Every structure is written in structure tokens, then in C-alpha cells.
Image 1 (cartoon, rainbow, N blue to C red):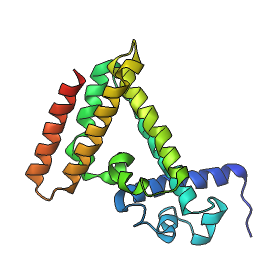
Image 2 (tube, rainbow, N blue to C red; image 1 turned 60 degrees about the vertical axis):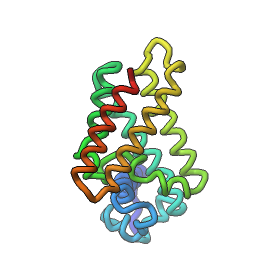
Image 3 (cartoon, helix red, strand yellow; image 1 turned 120 degrees about the vertical axis):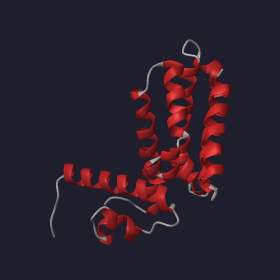
Length: 190
């Protein structure tokens, strides 16, 4: 039986988390079995329990990592409201809508996260709080706390708009939902 050093184990664990994040957002948490997740990572089922106590443990780590990655993307935006406007337009784009496996975990997984255990809900709560804080800081840099309510409203508006657009079979209607969502979000920011 091969023994691997700590660094190799951490790299492998991170690969599992990244591949599972993509699969969960694409097929859902419930639609993704351990064997599929491990196959995506190029590993056998038996290796799973060397890295995670359970699927719920993996889900909590994936949710935390997905939100950390999303929050890190804010650093690539222009400062202040202009960057937030760019974010709204990118978030509510057809590209984002059409590739859920590469996008926001909130729009892809919220309904399932609500049925998950406390560890996953806590990971999501921590990440969502940081996203709202980032939005508030961009809305009112001099007093982010005063913009917290508006930041929550903007965040929920964006996630709901994307979810609705993804659920529609009529492409023109789905595109219209995104277009109106951008208009509404930008108006809401004023």
C-alpha cells in the first residue's frame, strides 16, 4: 500500500473539491454520487474516505471553496460601483446562465443547500455573508453597513434572476429575463 506525503494528500483533496464543485453545479448534489465524483478526480471510490468523513463533509468543503473562489473574483473587478456594475452584467449573462458548472454555486445549488446539514448551511452562510459585505462595500465604501440591506436585495435579485432564466425553455424569454434583470439591478443600485 502506497503512502503519500501530506502535500500530495492536500493536492488530491483539492482536486476532489474542485471537480466535485463543477459536478455539483452541473448535475446537483443529489445527482452526483461518490463514484462519479471520484471518477471525475481520477481516483477510486476507496480513496474518498481518506479525504472526507462523508459526502456531507465533502459538500460543506465544496460550498466553502466555491464561495471563496467567487469572492476572490471581486478582486479582479474595477473599484467601487463600476466594478459592481461589471459584476452584475457578467453574472446575468447568457454565458453564465448556459454554463452552470462553471458559475455561481448559489444559482446552481441553493435549493439543495437548504436541505443539507448544518455544516453545509454554515459554510454557505459564511460565504454569502462575505459576498453581501463585498457588495455593500462597493455600494457605499465610506459606510458599508448602511448599504447592507440594499446589498442583500441586490444579491437575491441577481441569484433569482439567473435561476429563473436557467429554468425557461424559451430562449428569447430567458434572454429577456436576463436583460430586465440587469436593468433592474442597475436601477436598484442607484
